Length: 111
Length: 110
View 1: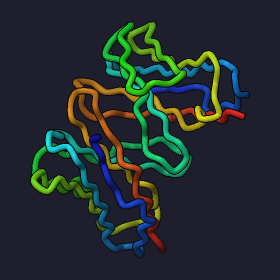
View 2 (view 1 turned 135 degrees about the vertical axis):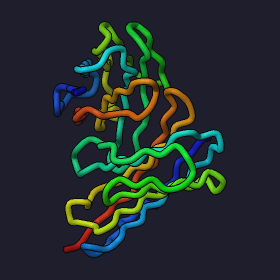
View 3 (view 1 turned 60 degrees about the vertical axis):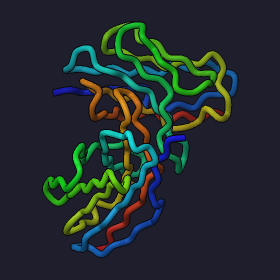
């Protein structure tokens, strides 16, 4: 069966510091991968998606970036965090473009 | 702007009752519809998806889709306290374009 991992689970970072969140998927090949952010009490906002290695699409302009160095690895990065980057970051995968399954998430607090 | 609208709630029902959660969407071209359950502090969990008009049942859950009215709902029969969570409606237009509502918070009271 498929499993999706995210780490770290929680993170507290100062403004201006860099960020690296990692997501890996097991049990499937060539998945579509997604990064979402959920602000407190808000819906999910799609940040990036990837249909293959090195293929990244961005949904919203921001100071975040994403990379997919391996088929089942998806990384979310920032060079300098802003207060507004705080939130719950969720990685998700899908196959054949249908239903998406979420990882456990990373709760980021920027202070 | 494509939108997915949900009543934020909270929706409160007694244990054993039917909980009815509603969602409307703006894009008539939407093709796939999903319901996720999200417990506080946890990530969303897929509970139902529906692609065709009508009803789809899975255990205590029934998803209903009416594309003409741009309306999708989730019924939870015999509600249990463990069903207390936020329910997210999601609508998909294409391969990678999934849009989420802000969610409805459901409380099932013993």
